[in-house]
Image (cartoon, rainbow, N blue to C red; front, side):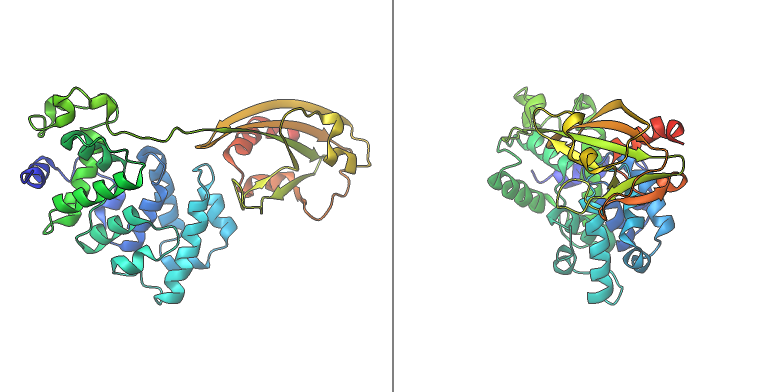
Length: 348
């Protein structure tokens, strides 16, 4: 379809989505926005982007910041490996590129946490290099307009869509073209209730012709979620409380939580290994609340037991005793943060 790039650019209005990262060609800021917006809605990601730019205005500021500070600013955004990779990649830029964000696609994609889409986005938006972006919006637009039924999560499908996107790319205006097709997918060719009446491709759209708008794009893999139970022990007295940093290669690595036991199947507070290690008698033990959180591949059940002492006992070196008034200075998983927002007033 030779007219595709032309029709797309005729439709595009750069002022329609006046997002802050669209107003710059600074590769550092574009990179930040792309990492933050992975698996994240624009409305949710925008405040985080603005906060990161304010606290870390340069890649050097980001690279030299403690990881705990970055995780704290990232708190609530989820997919925390993105924050860890962001920190690692910033150090790569400082060490391998003398603090200047790389300008070639090959150097950009070599940075930690950057894949094909992100490298293409930075390359085109920062340097106007001819690399086509293929994100969820682009998959949807191309699959519908061209009637592609190859699953987008298959190796064959990814290759097919990337090749088509490259063929359609306006090599003279790659940055504008890439932004236009992503905006088109977000505003017109939407996942639900697309605006087909307003679509400039409606006369050529195969999905519309075949009545398959709701069926495209196709995913072949069914997502299976694992259910997990975390039993948290909120051990505290009038002044102090215990927390622990997650260091294992699992969800929420680097974030803080309360002393925890993970249970599969039957479990009760009576056989808790953590409580058995505490040889002091608590004043009270209350099972206050259970919270649930759905992650991409996991369903988390968090059970909180508030264990109050007159003076909290000494736990082993894996636990950190802190003043309760300082607890919100630490970065917690969203599910623990919600608990704290509900209950902290009762613990102080």
